[in-house]
Image 1 (cartoon, rainbow, N blue to C red):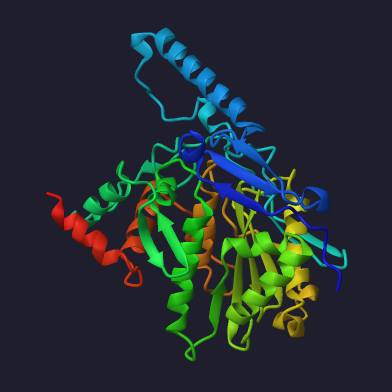
Image 2: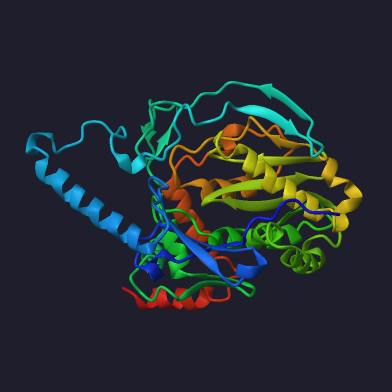
Length: 396
């Protein structure tokens, strides 16, 4: 079976290794042309605006100019107006939040692999009032109220201070045998940061481990790591090698599997593909859909489904499953929480759609990030958990 057009394999690097602040996206794209297959290109994305830089020099020069502009603005700001009266966004820092004309209508759009298109539309325009991400908001947009974070116990408070400290950025904080999370990875869970693939993979491992407890009691779910989609969208050699690895691990027995979760990344934006075997559907769960990249994201999912036809999934005729963009998927109100929404979808999507939209919303981004840190580091399957607890007990 011929596969769809291949997309270069993408790796995401630690921005601190390039001298960039946390939150910046450093993308390394490996070329697929046989003549240049050993070469790669690096691109640098500013977290607030998603502005793309083709060289590190250009990115660093942009940061320097921005720093000077910020100092100049502060100097020009009158003292009488120094206090903010409203927490509405008035700064270019949040220019990448979804605008009304860039957010799709919330639709149930079904695309079949043979090209057939079925569409029913439920209009749901984005709010023009975007609440500052410095506040945690619930209720209707623009009329929310501040939500206080749940109180932390002493050990959790000390843990967060330890994780987000200035200690060795390469220290392993989570060890799941095959998956590891370093301090530099966990630093992306600080507020207003783009979450790296390592965090999503740790959550996927955690969820897969918990699913084993229900084996034989109910239909279970499989959560694939982010590298799976990258390899499926790579060269044919990478696809065949990856299929050998993942078939034995995830697709050997599918009789009692209800859903397969596959996280994908499109130029720094995380979204989720869910294969619902009992319902014979494929969902694209995208917390920040745009008209500009809609077709490309569907094409990515289509390529993965085509590759999966070479596994045990072939007997389910997954290539005939409709690809749906459900109208029950919430939209994020900033440009950096896409990874959190993918994690939220994986954690909460345990019922047959339609799902309650409110149950999938990340109401308090900062608290959600803190909870992820605590859940992962204090997980009983974390091999360095006791070591870290010993370190915390040494501190006053």
